[in-house]
Length: 65
Image (cartoon, rainbow, N blue to C red; front, side, top):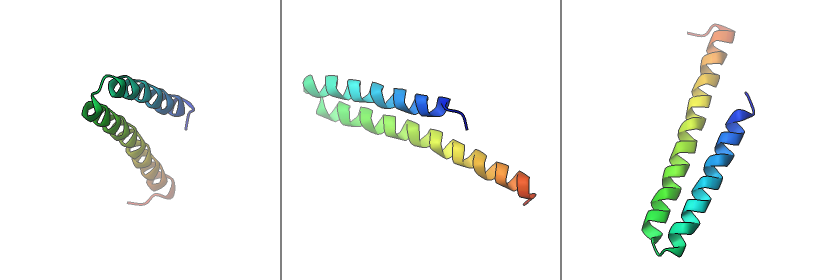
């Protein structure tokens, strides 16, 4: 695992936080909540992909089919 994924997740978190604060200050609370949910979904999809790669590696290492 490389450290790049941690930086990507942190960058997404910072970006979503800034957008969320701007939208809340503008009175767009519903859109701010949707933006936060979209950021969470993107990060979760990245993590699910990494877990899938982990299980594939484990299958190959132990020759499980």
